[in-house]
Length: 186
Image (cartoon, rainbow, N blue to C red; front, side, top):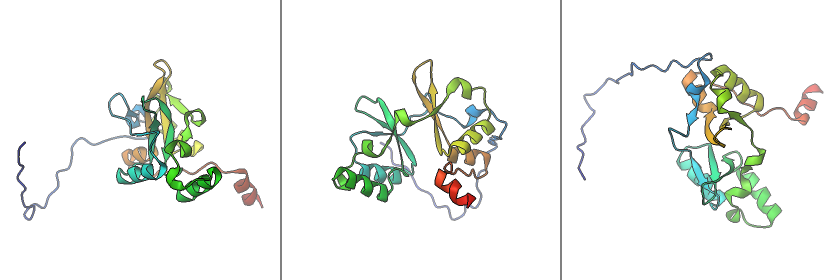
């Protein structure tokens, strides 16, 4: 192992700006905003992890979502910080007559049979604006991408990543509920 020297930055007053400018625009290919698990590891959490520890891991890694896998790395669902809100944990713990410390990530996750995803082949012919519209219309901050031919989760698209690449905020709201529409109409 080698010791690395540290240097003072007192006389350094300029930043190096990359000349490789990301030129992602709404008409750019959708694959330019896609996190491909063929090139980067998916962020996963083991199904046996308790909910509180899951939230702690997500906070420490600044992750809003994780894929939940079993001990054989089989995909079970997704967990988001929204699912791990304290009030939701308390409500579920009361329902199960247990403490929140006993809740597992699998108790709080969105199961895979409740999720929707884009198809990789379809994504490969779409553009960024198609994806943004789909995220907004469905109230999703993350969208999984599946490969039907290989029968696996190929990757995902995160609204935060899209906003960063476009250099504009993307407003994602949950689709209005019947009660919201009713209250608005009154």
